[in-house]
Image (cartoon, rainbow, N blue to C red):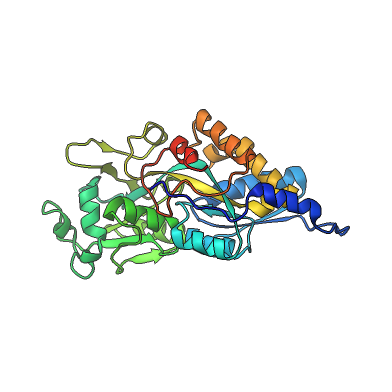
Length: 333
């Protein structure tokens, strides 16, 4: 799990090259381009709004899913990529092929939330084993009713709603629940738009779905969060700030990230300024949009990591579950 992405050129070398490059007297257009995860979007959009007011720098924030965002990022089309899971090996290879180095920055915690219809009175608590039985590839075309998952549940159709294949939420959920990223049945309603999933579950008493905690919190009047039992004998735990911070909401508590193009960080003062602002001013905005800020010691470590402009990833190209921020940062040498 601790394999590293070896960089072909250090950030220091980028900076040195800048002094040797021809000087252009044309004023660069101050636009910061961000794309990626719909889960991270509310935080980045909130930070972008405040940064634009403070600096008059334009920040565009798109939503094409974590996977879609990395495709653009690794082609050099964006300065920053929002991600609800770590960068994968294929994406690392694509970035390397295009000469794009990146700086990996955890920015908050999220609780990937399993939701049911409020009228569902039998599935208020769900085990990881039950969720796996619903979502694993072997369930496709076979596990069609709630009763097939648990004999105590009614013989009613099981209506599944989940993140699309380009979503980091899809990758993380399948890794945490099924045991392998992207390993899932395909016969469910999938969308990169979390609002589609919210409305789907809210509109059908037999529905179940999953997405980031913020979207649940915004819609808790029409949804119910299920308490999760990690393994036999474990307590059932609801997603909350407390259960994320103390690590008891497992395996669906997760860090979320921004990835910064290292060239942009070295060459574009407005990009560096935006990330500086993001890491030092975002805590109240993170709380406002219902995510959980990093503990101060982790935040300080991330800021130090950013100031050193250390490129690479602390993951081995795998959407690892349960990693601590302090351990993650220590892996990047």
